[in-house]
Image (cartoon, rainbow, N blue to C red):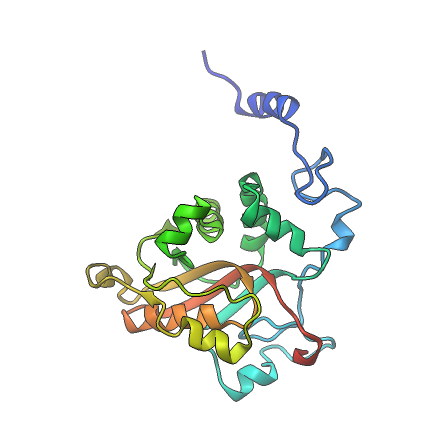
Length: 244
């Protein structure tokens, strides 16, 4: 006997109702946020820097760059983020990252996929954790997001192409200069994996863009190993007033 998929989904929704990823209230839609929480999340939309995705406070011509990218372009071709990392939005990421709220991954991945620029059939690679940190945490939140995005888009998920070879200290309170130094030699592409990167476009996924140091360090290694170009995608982005 065949079961109607739509009826099965409705039955599952009755048993396990969808809940707001912020406050936990039961939802009537699949967008991930209730009507009360939706306005609290500062979703990023145009205008923003054509390269790093930094939002502008005013309308500007298409393709404009922010001051930092005008001075020195990052090694990734584009970076996009879903929302600004604020006091209202950060709990979405912190719960997902530290309290095993992995059920939020499909919702976050849907939001992230909508933020993507036009790219064709990339290899999807998460920013890796060092194996010791992965052992302690039991999962890599960036990998969960990457896997869900690859399923949504029908792209190839390749979590083992990029390795974090050094366990770097937490970057939470480091300056941009110290962050760059901290991750400058942290990542590695195994020689046996390099042929898979040859001439390919890469989608590099992480949870938060703070200064871009980690994304730039990963991009450097991927490009050196043979990738054609790298596009970065994160869920949140730290936006400081002096950056805009």
